[in-house]
Image (cartoon, rainbow, N blue to C red; front, top):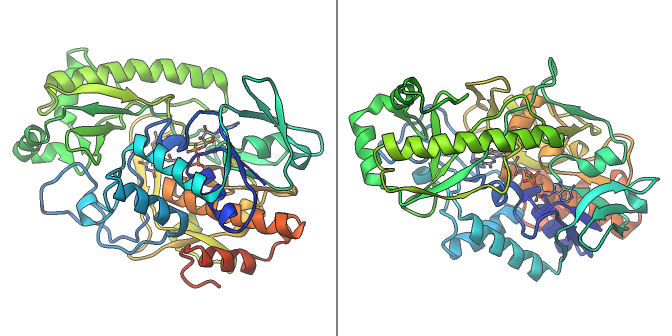
Length: 445
Ligand SMILES: Cc1cc2nc3c(=O)[nH]c(=O)nc-3n(C[C@H](O)[C@H](O)[C@H](O)COP(=O)(O)OP(=O)(O)OC[C@H]3O[C@@H](n4cnc5c(N)ncnc54)[C@H](O)[C@@H]3O)c2cc1C
């Protein structure tokens, strides 16, 4: 079977399918694994723990979220394996109260750990292969890749689309939705970057003196206003957002924002690269000139591209809604769970909407969300699975993407082994295999 895309969902899919006994090829457009986690420098992994709201950590460490109370993990399986390996190499910090339950990680070590895990699982890799379409009759006849060696067709009985954008499903004619139900607008793009030689003590001293100027992982409103008045800064965001990493003298900055652009439109994405890089230049200068702790800091790396939060959501046999997420709905065909809030960066400008689940709660994602309506031999996972704009803003985060990927891989493997379409695989069989692989389905199988 074939997995297209080597991001969090694709890693989960390849590992899940291989563990279920399938022969797996993973094809990826870049020369490394990790998807947004490495290509777009999206850090950290957001929380996969249940939470209690309005919790302020007293220790004054201000580089991780402070609004996440104690919680229990709701994702395990392939994610747990990746984290064990990353933490053992010093490439990640165990999530808990000290990290606000996010997982700070090193993207270079994640690339290496992901490669090791796929190697050990016997997954065959094709890098530098961009899937540009499917042959007539759908993905079973073959997925077409553009490569340096010319076009290549890979035929597989079952294909898992982990491109984030649902490229294979869309090419196969699947129905999809884009953006908000009212106006089709999607969440903004953000070019992320890493700054090093950051002096944490200097920054914390500023925050201690100006406690109203930093909330958890974002703020600096007064300094921004002053820089804007001086003509140094012109940003759509009203604040600066950055996170700590496993390295004491490094921060990961998530503060550029380009609205009104769609990641499946090459002209939009080109504009976003141009626009976000101009913002990056301003933000780096602003931090160096005006923010204590950044006097000697410098830009070490920016994403390979501006990060794309939202494009197609492939219509599946079930469409997950905000109500399902926020009421922590359970489904008989659960294949993954999530606890991350609805978290929507304003598609039109500044501001972010955050809606939390009830204390201690998690929601189920049903297998039906991975099965594109009316298309056989194809399973989707990650941020392109079936749901509403609001629900997507929760299930798009990397731990959940990895969990839905693992489930898609297992479903595709069982379908391939039995010579049946993924839709014909009983949900109970997928659940039983996922549980055998260590996934956390809470009450299934
Ligand atoms: C700016 C930004 C900040 C975010 N912040 C966080 C955060 O702090 N924490 C968090 O957990 N999540 C965060 N997210 C969300 C998260 O990064 C993504 O939703 C998640 O990575 C989705 O995983 P995925 O595997 O579905 O897609 P991706 O990570 O996008 O991976 C898709 C993979 O498929 C490959 N691919 C795409 N198209 C093709 C093709 N046609 N042919 C071959 N290969 C292809 C890509 O190169 C990539 O490797 C953020 C996202 C963005 C953009």
